[in-house]
Length: 324
Image 1: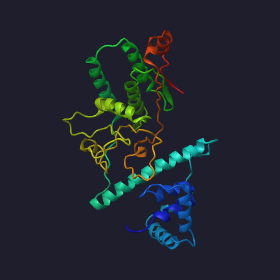
Image 2: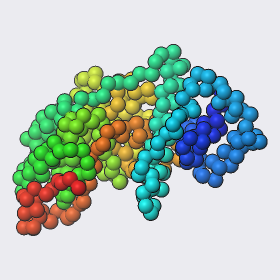
Image 3: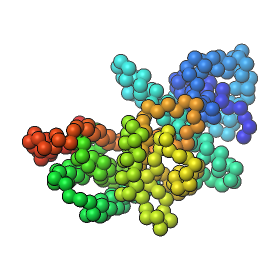
Image 4: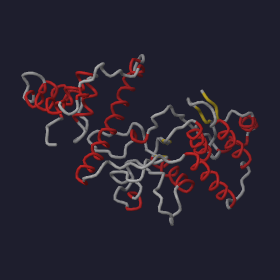
């Protein structure tokens, strides 16, 4: 404790990986710097720089306890970082942000554990098969009290296709269903069953607009969160820039040290939301699955599209949800 490590960590990150990863260490207290500032700070950390002596002292102090700060061999970077055109740059930017949020979260957990005088507390992963059963049961209850619709039969067919597809191998799946086709329920059923079938521990729902995020989160809370009378933790934390983090009800499931677990579903407003300068404890990375995961995408069309023979034939043919 008390060892200045920001510049030392940046120096080591650049030495053993790439400079952009130094932003993760340098910014884990105050927010990631831009590349120009990061380069300037790295110069200060190198021999002859203002921080050089402190960097040497910090590295010596830490390596005596954690020699792994000098990895041999060097960490292998993901192969997809070398993707052509702008895809590699986009991948690097996303990876850095994911790592940044992981480090920020770990720093909060470790600091809290230190001052509490206890080990870091994490809850056991949610049982996906049990959540899938809860989802099925509550969906049936919701449908039983809802007014019937002319497209209910098609909605049910879409739902059934999603459930059948969930037993497939991990990969990229696309759900093509017009507006009003109950994509939210079908996608949730697919994700939970797919996670259970393939040993995955988490499901992440990424939605491009806050309004849609709130709508989806409300549906999944009704389907999956424990009853109000239960002492169980919520499993559907909703995370985006409009969430009221002062809400006691929200914080019951989103405590700084996650005393009872990692949520099963999260609803971030956007993967591209600007995290710079923010100490985000609840950002995506800690919720992303460590295993390969399925991604679902819905493409809204106008409701009358349901009435066209082509739309009905298309859904009936079994192509509402497919692997790509």
